[in-house]
Image (tube, rainbow, N blue to C red; front, side, top):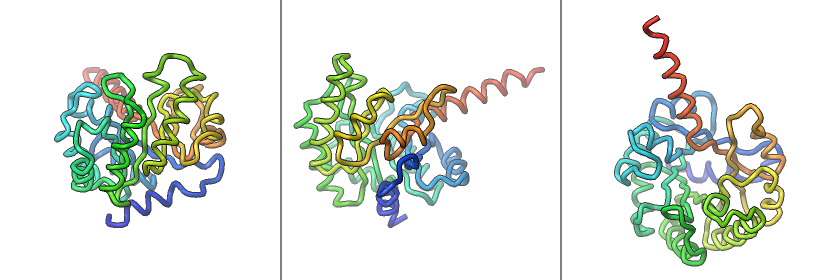
Length: 245
């Protein structure tokens, strides 16, 4: 869809508290169709979910296979799709933009760590600035901030670093930031310190905060990582277990 990026961009704007944008994660064309038919306005591919569907461990999917999987998903639906492209696969910013557009994606996540190690924030911001210049508004960039998963373990410091990194990435052209695995308790601190849309991860557990509750705490948009794919796989295993009965 030619105007997909503008649709995705508009979905992030002026959202009332408690009404975040909910972006479920398809892992193949069939799941994408099911989610679109359920009425979701946009979708966000999870790299770990796609990897599992392709037979790879998280972080080990070759770039060509990831982009091919994203292309199959975008062809299957008429809603905007934003793609988790991990750390960018070592591609130059211009090539990364070209690969995303060729796959039909209108948004993406780019992580600020590689191999479990945080990147230098200013160097990464420079990379994101080059990416945004090459994209020229055609891709909505969600900059993932990994201080809560690859920091030094100090929660307070993780918040400070997340806010600092978010400011650099937004200044570079990112339109949303994603401090993945940030504890629910710090979302208000992140919201007050980050001047842009905030992505939060919702956990599909009985005691996990609902998307609406996360929105009340400051989240602009909600994603679920690979949880839908894992739930679907577990359901298939349960069904298979009863086939011989």
